[in-house]
Amino acid sequence: MEDFWSNPSSKKREVLRRKLFTKEGIRSEFVEQLSPETVELIDPGTISLAWSQISRPGVIDALLDLHLDYRTNVALYSKFHSYFRQYNPPTLIIWGRQDQYCTPAAATAYTRDLPDAEICIIEGGHWAVESHGPHVIQLTREFLDRHCYSPTANLSAA
Image (tube, rainbow, N blue to C red):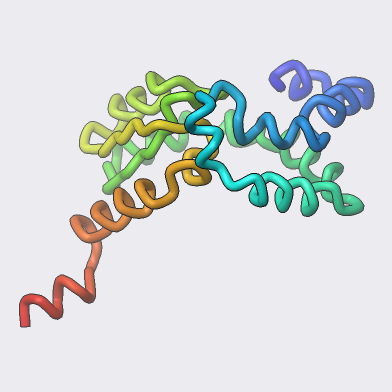
């Protein structure tokens, strides 16, 4: 991807199109590097729905443009990290242990700038919410209950 960012030629764009934005490429996004047991947890309909939406006219080109534009996020990382250090916002990071793009070490690296961040490494890959949705929801609700106004907590106090 970084090679595409530094020299976004039409040839490199087509390589990405053929690698990422095919029916098999989209399936790979969901299941790459996962154990067979974890793959079984992902509803095949989710993958089919993703492909049916992505394969609509113009969507793949828009996604290729988005992938190219992601380089602007990378250029802003130092500003993000500065904000994290200055404000230390409550942060929950849920990371799939088998993420094909970033290892769990990338998740724990956030604690350099966010020492109070809650890091939860769970089973699953880059799309861990697809394989472990109930667990992700539980972790998120618990985090929000600890850090935000909770109407249910208010009712129990009454």
